[in-house]
Image (cartoon, rainbow, N blue to C red):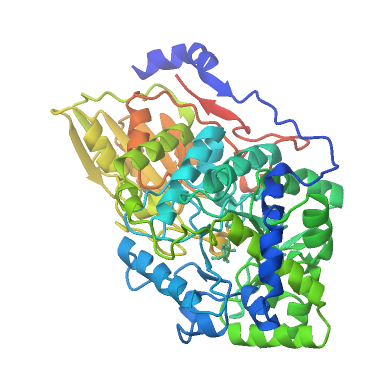
Length: 624
Ligand code: GLC
């Protein structure tokens, strides 16, 4: 069998290698005027200015203050500090992660905000970066790296529309998404949050996500305010420039420095903001990282001159989590620098009383002009008006009619399609597609039966977690559902037991991580996974390997030992989409949105590099 295939291989491969021929033309006009999508916000200025004129300085400062709900010392502080927003950062959860508890959490705080003198409603923000993934039972979609492999902007828009609807079912009205990073070094822990290493693909899919989350006019009750992040160049940091956390732990890439000329920065990292602003994004989150040694969150060039004045952004800038604390200087100078540079709202998130008092002091002293405060609050109020928070039919409680669609089969079907289209087939010497009526299929490895592993970071917990962490279908379960009655599907964690089976399916890869905890200089399979592959290959049975990962890994030995090999990225809860491809119900169409290196020494490697020599090129993907 295998001999015949090998002989036929060149013909087979020649007809199967599919690369993405589309080139992503960049818009060569560099002159930007206020895009139509931003005119929406300005259209509310009459009502905004009327409200602004009635506000005290303290009420204005309150609107610029965003605590994380987990740090509130007293729920009445929402009223007393007149906060404009709250967030639930990673791990900032209600008593349980049930749908009901999340909805109750939002409604508790929104009702507090309405007790203030002017009853200005809250924007409540979460990181629903691949579905409303904090909440048990939500549909968890593939992370962006997988969506990049689909090349399907319409699908990304539909996923975002569904995500917005599931978020609003809990009442929450702001999503810190899409991440429009252009990750250029896969060793950065947040690579999987990026759609691609290629700027124009990121720009295309980022704008689609904004359209899906916000809809046409943001007033649609089933939509949420989007947030393009992290401005700018978060994916362009160089090795050994990363953050040292207060506990002394150091990380090579995350929150590091981007040593580029302005022309290079614009060409590689800014396009996602150009298209997001044009698509009408309501908020943008400046990055922890630096550009040529200057912290983005304190850069007037970036925050005001480029994003607001040049791109015509009329919404508001929200800082990242304690990001202004990382500016050089003391806390008071951090606030002064960041607000004067153009930051409009600060994700404090813990010392909100100190922030409030210090900002008030700076305004009192004239260190921050009142005009800057008014501009920030005007921008915040514009987004709130556009989001319908002042509409007569707006309610501080979640729309109960949305609950039946939360986690629904209809939503899961779209996620299943995304999983199908995100799978990239890298090698196939005839083991795929599998026969549904095989005698026995043996499924092995740590990722075979683990929703947590297949979902990755930002899932229920900030870092994600191994195990049956939420509702969904594992790869093993999907295979069992797909085969015919008489087919036996067996399983082992360590790769043994394949002898006598028709095929052994190996599922290995990265365990969940988020942010700096994913910074990794080697990017290879760990010893446990290598042993699984070796055990499976020793059986002499054809090996199909599925790699769960947030980026390309160095997989030489595993690739060599496999008859077929596919990257499934971080597919989320709907692994039926993987079975659809494995059994030939869907011929694979996924194409790499990140170059696949031959060895760790090649990092960073990106399409367009001189002497570009990856193992698999940007755009590569097999089919049949
Ligand atoms: C995090 C991330 C950012 C997220 C924010 C709120 O540190 O950098 O992507 O939106 O904090 O959780």
